[in-house]
Length: 240
Picture 1 (spheres, rainbow, N blue to C red):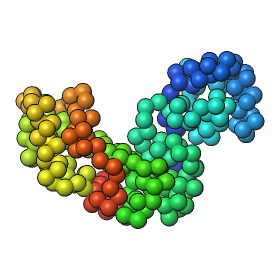
Picture 2: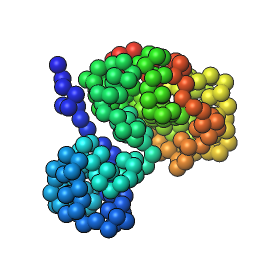
Picture 3: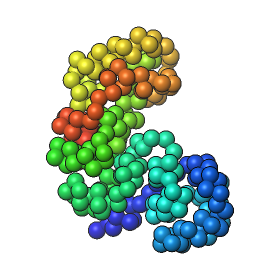
Picture 4: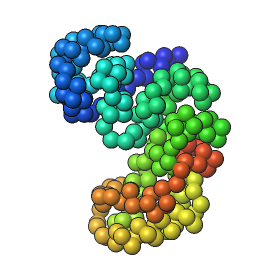
């Protein structure tokens, strides 16, 4: 059986944010390393410098310890708003074991989904997920289920060919939202991004205009997560 630790991936980390937080506290890398030791994290000052210059990223325990040593929320050191299952879990201070237990699954199962960033579960577990993560938007739930890239690719096609109706079914399936609501959002997006009609080779996805995903969710009304929606997280095992 695969051990959860074998599936660990480095957490999101913003070197500039870490450096800024240290400088605000007027701490040297030596002092940070010494402080980390009090939290059970043993690193050298050179490791702290490597984190800050981006040549090496801290592990999950190191990131949590660093946040404690710098007296900042762990999310401060993680860069942009969390958009992966791992980042969302870290943002509320849960371990993989605690998160898995809270939603009724093994640590190994949670770790596999987190490593792939593909949440797959029934309504009960998905409802528990939304609860333990402090509430999620529907957009975030789609993203931590691996649907963000699929949605972006379909929106890229639509902004290029203008054939929104052809992409409506696939987008509706990803979101699990009402078809009419998705159609209205796509109509709003089409008004903002007229079809470009670029000629592309088969299988090539056109570039996505800046801000198109944000505007799509704006037209959707930025709804809260609906764990009971027949969305991407309900896909059968093995289907991506």
